Image (cartoon, rainbow, N blue to C red; front, side):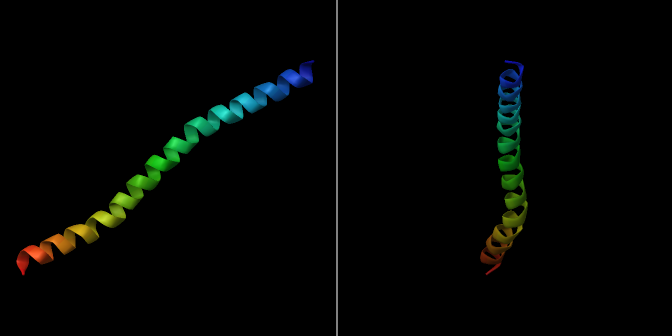
Length: 51
């Protein structure tokens, strides 16, 4: 009985940690992609405006 409860609690807390970690990782990935892509796009726009 106690072992089953322990397993259920472990699964619950693992799921809770995943629910917190996954959106955080997605947000971080979007932030890094934005910082990598924005200068390239901005440079291309400024070149088009100068020409």
